[in-house]
Image (cartoon, rainbow, N blue to C red; front, side):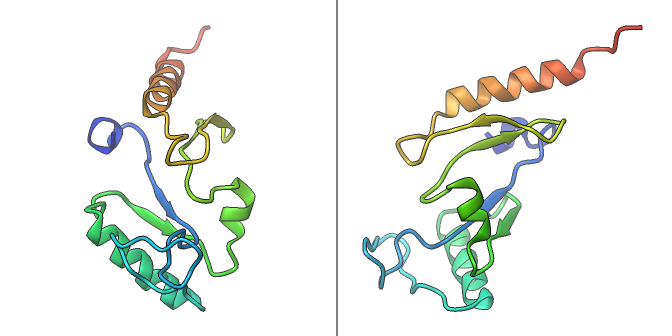
Length: 122
């Protein structure tokens, strides 16, 4: 998706609370990390995750340790969003990973791109 739309759409990965920290309720062996206690540790965890999952080509932002972004978007564990050019949510996917509806997101991206590329009527 990043390769297809990256030049037309600003794509960001937002790193939020560690859903599978080894000291958390549901550890995951793919990427072992501890639950961070400050912003620096969260940043280090994000760097490890992005590297191990080969996502380094996607620009990333990191939620601070207060988890405000996660709370605002009810993102745990993860979601796909499209923010339209008007600043409004144009697509909000369900909670992942089962709520990841990539075909629906790509259709919403195509619709948004078509909408903004139409010439304005005089």
